[in-house]
Length: 237
Image 1 (cartoon, rainbow, N blue to C red):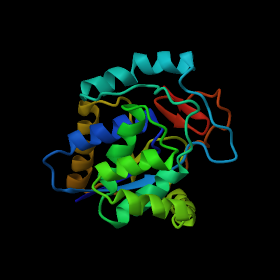
Image 2 (cartoon, helix red, strand yellow; image 1 turned 90 degrees about the vertical axis):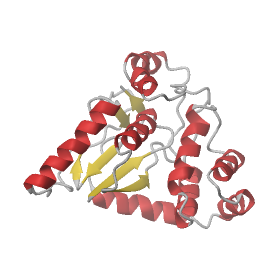
Image 3 (spheres, rainbow, N blue to C red; image 1 turned 30 degrees about the vertical axis):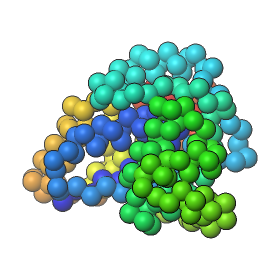
């Protein structure tokens, strides 16, 4: 049995494509357990960023990430026409609500689609409420829970616990049996290869003792580019 840990944010395009690639790569397999942890790219009071009018980012995504997404059959806008890019604390609160009710995966799919396909502002409760309804949740109850702030502290605790799992220097961060996945492309073949490598390691009894290995510190300047992933200031290719 493989344990997959996915650390991700709803406004990270690489995260969305990675989740779809992983889902397709795992299709038909019954030897995987996936654990999702929301992790905000931009937290208050840090200023929100405008990805829609960032031509450098747009061109770099068009050169690699967009073709990967299209190869998976995804209908996406990278970047979406949502200015500024929303904070995702509320969306993360919604995930905790959905997870408690066994709808975490369906909620994630609906929220990612709301932002990257429908180009909706997922920082708004009304948008998240519709996503919750698509995930099979009671929209009114969901909205009331977010309005009450009952999950706000839980999101902070979730972040703290996530940072205890591994050093996070960019998103998505994916652990397969405790080992950080080295993601070079966001294609079905690339993610199948990751799972096949995990199969090989498990078959050969190779110890996975690197879940807490040290990695390079996260970049704090938005101008710094991250190869094939997201950093504190934004998502770069």
